[in-house]
Image (cartoon, rainbow, N blue to C red; front, side, top):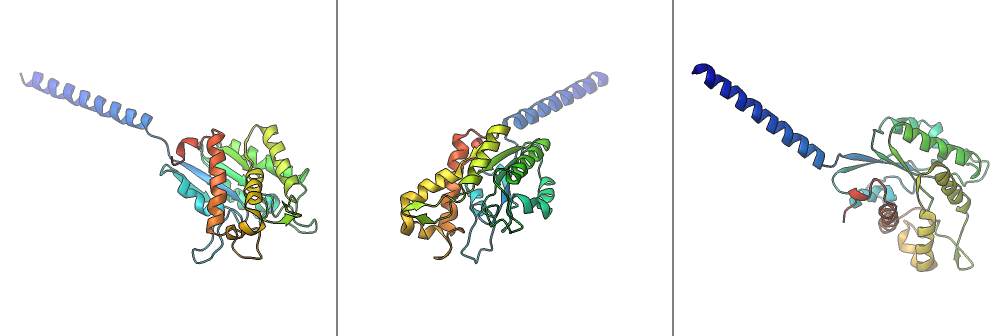
Length: 244
């Protein structure tokens, strides 16, 4: 009798354990894994102290994702595709990347500086080569690279938004096609927005009257909205993590 009771208790314990394991497995299968969204870029992407009026779009974009996403902003003011690597910032960033993460890459403003500047690159040669490296390194880490073309500077020439960054935007789109990478064309979307607002209407988007590169809070949010809209439309791995 005692043996029978003991055997029944063991059997009940095994069934409970199996049920618990099954429930845990089902819960694991039905829940989204948390991922990192890692941002790489220049001052237009970077974080700034709260007391400053300047904002990068990377500083405000976390508010567009749900709680399953952790945004890690590695962007640094003054960096180009070249100097971000040369200064060791890319190596530091890669150590943060894990399988399944997404890495958003936007450069171009500092790459377009005068040829005698150390951060300068040529759109069709070393800028393109550096972009290939970023894409290849992210994929080697079993993560997803997403390229973002540089946005327009808020400068107008004869009533039209200026186009000095177009060679870099075009080069990035070329690399995206070559590497079969999602490319968010912020150059086009920001140009459309700024052209619609006009020289006077875009003033609130920027952090100072004389500055037509760096954003205010309002401007950073406007740029982030353009990126998020295209992330959703492109059916990227991040689409399901965006707030409805």
